Length: 187
Image (tube, rainbow, N blue to C red):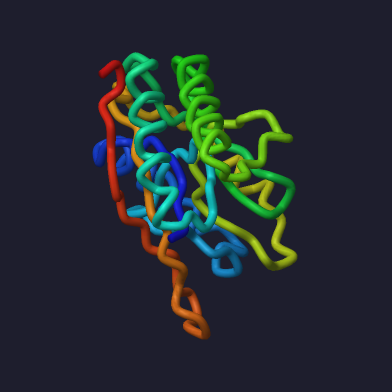
């Protein structure tokens, strides 16, 4: 199954961001973007890809240990940006040092069980709100997230999430995400 480790912001936080993203839907070119569904909004810590059933229990053990080693911490969604003109994202403020440590631990645990985790790029916490496969520039959309500052929340758990790919050939189909396990931070 296709898995990743993530932090899931609470519903009130996602509602605030959703109000700002709704305004972005009214900008010229918005129809050319593939907007992510709010039910799937998350902060990816480490992407694992396909993980076999025989490796998953040991991965779960490693993630439980990782969660135990990191304490709850405060974050908020704020601002935004883009990865070239491929992806539009909301930014993260707060205790990013602890979040980065949690991401590093989630990746290291996976590597210890034989999962190849891309660790070439430094961790950049973000929440993807749209993807772009057209020639539409994302600069106006990123500017629309400037000044956004959501409420603080306390990150209290690390989640292991399964990604169900979208149905092939269905226009606008999105992946569906399912939490398969979660562990409290700090034990």
